[in-house]
Amino acid sequence: MISFNYETNFKLENEEFFKKWIRYVIYKIFKFSFTKDIQKLRPHISLNSKIVIYTTLILIVVGSVFFYFLESENTLEEHSGFGKIITALFGSITTRTAGFNTVDTGALQLPTIMIVLLLMWIGASPGSTGGGIKTTTFAVATFNIIQQVFGYKNITIGSVSYTHLTLPTTPYV
Image (cartoon, rainbow, N blue to C red; front, side):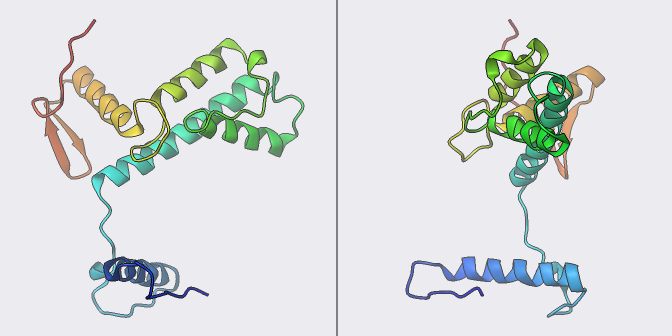
């Protein structure tokens, strides 16, 4: 059961935001609305949050798939089928955040080490204590590369469009 203690420093707007989310989830699951206007129930998710969520999910899935297929006959050999999936998932997530390991890192193959180094270089999302260049920086840089290769004049992410003048420029080495 969820209860709110009004004696704490829990702000009223956070409670209203939480109530909106609960109403929205109830509407999505049961198609039952407390009000006629469902758009008022849908909380606004910022572009930064969308980039963080999508980039994180893509990095987790891609890193896990690479880790699984590159190490299934090597360091993951001692695990069962489900154990291989979980270990690959853990290896993909933890390289960007905490740095724990469940397999012998000295026995990893060179392609796997390169994937691990790439994930460590990208790092965690903004607002966390994980290192790296951050997932949003990686996403915007990737979109910038796509823009350069295909000759687009703008980078469009969702409904926001960036021109080449608004992105920071760095000299190429």
